[in-house]
Length: 364
Ligand code: ADP
Ligand code: TRP
Image (cartoon, rainbow, N blue to C red; front, side, top):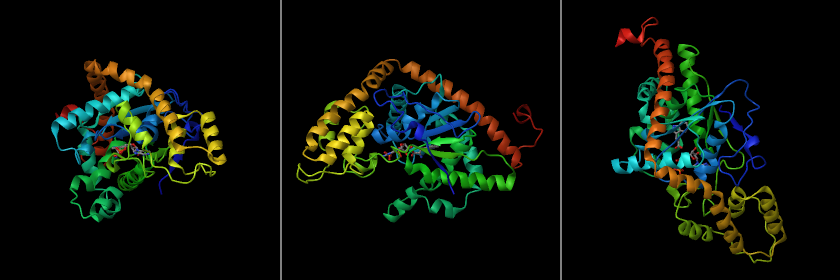
């Protein structure tokens, strides 16, 4: 069984909604210096679901008592992005977006997945500890197969590469949105099985999802996702953003009728951007009735613009200094590789691929 830590310390009460990157994290459940790791695919521009479900956590956790590693999962993205210009543009955009949103390279290590080639070797080793049935149950592969779409081996083995990402850095906590929890469960199973065979080599990680934004709704109320056409990009054009917000689907009940804010996706989206007081007031308005959805949407347009205004400005500045971004990624890769080499050596020794006393020099 997997374990999900819903970290209420970062829920609506402590999170400061007007300052992206200013969340407060208290990891009371963890003693000692934990290792935090997460990855995000460069498959397109980040949307509100990515920010509130995942990126917001990355930023909150970088200032705690842990060591944070975050990476741009370009090897995973290769299962869908098959154009080289598009891939490098997406990687650059992902780095800019993360840095602009508050990821601080002095606090956390940011790198590109393929800059740590050790990952492919660990992935292969883990593959040999992964039962087929485990991967057959994973949703991304299962959904594609159910739709009769062709699936490649990369998509099938996707969770094993993800397990390698996590285990490679001795990660304790993996901040993600709800949809990734199954993959972390798979990682725990693979690590457990490897440890059972070869000894206590891997740290068993835990997923961390935020209670208030594990599954951010899209414009139509379903889960927000780039694949469902219901997403709003964090740094999208403001006019397009406004049009999308004004187009959020709502019901056609009479204005006077009192309504329940619970489970209402417009209310849920509003509460992500508003202060607790504003959210409370809107909840009362819903329950009282006599209001139009149009005015709430208009208010939301303003809240959203304000919420990301500073980050937009930071992004503009970063865009003008690509050499800084390059340097951040190069430093990050060097730091990540040091840890990866250490863990890979431990794994190789445990399964007899490298003799216990063999030094790096001997095999060069
Ligand atoms: P998408 O579904 O748009 O392709 P990704 O799979 O690239 O998004 O997700 C990247 C990160 O953002 C993951 O940690 C994922 O759990 C999180 N995430 C994506 N969509 C949402 C959402 N609607 N609500 C909460 N978290 C989300
Ligand atoms: N699969 C994740 C996603 O689609 C991205 C990812 C790759 C990841 N490797 C990871 C997330 C390791 C957490 C840990 O969003």
